[in-house]
Length: 263
Ligand code: ATP
Ligand code: MG
Image 1: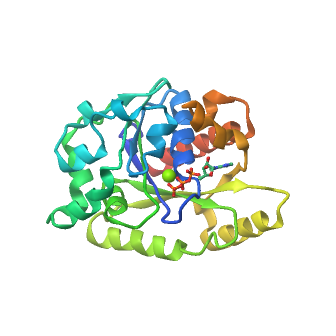
Image 2 (image 1 turned 120 degrees about the vertical axis):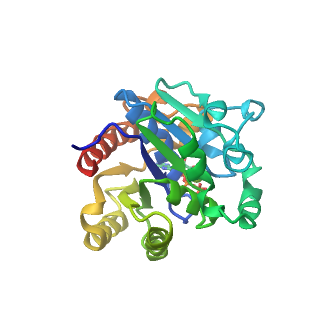
């Protein structure tokens, strides 16, 4: 019997900076929440962009993902509501930047997030999205060890596929050593510009190399997506019918369909 009710944990990862990880975590999260799914975002990047994007002020970040993995703070105490119904977040601060080093001396260093989530009552959430930092460091490894699957945003720009083999290699290593059932949830093309030949070229290359893993949905380059965080809300709230918002809703449908297949 497929279990489509179990919490699905998805690490949004790509070690390349600025490819749309945080934008995807925020807006895919909001799009899933809109359909009635209960979504938790874990801000796992010391930059704290996802937290800022929801307008979580620094002084309201009492407990963070750092506390979750290094101070044994229970998940329930660290969860903060956002302005979006059905969507909450565990924020991050710069503290998390030292976690990589602090984790390094711990024998259980790759399993800290997994242990924290296993110890918690996560049943209320249908999706947990982990916004990873732009690095294949111990934080990203922790996310991959804790996750069911990795969702990879791929910026439709030159060099997009560069570095992807390293990311795939890391996923394979995590599978071999710590999380044999880790899957690739999918690859989403971001900042897509259909008038730009380069975007089309990257899409062709990605579909040829990665096949079915690439979502049909492409996230267009859309200024609303980049403006929304400064208004402390997802684009889906800031400009609900913008092309970016619509694309993330369609992506959410694909993610939901794959979840049923994976169950
Ligand atoms: P980092 O690696 O630093 O964590 P990231 O991969 O999380 O970056 P984002 O922060 O989501 O990437 O996006 C990088 C920049 O591009 C941001 O300014 C964001 O607002 C903008 N951006 C992301 N997606 C789009 C899009 N589809 N259209 C226009 N701007 C976008
Ligand atoms: Mg980010």
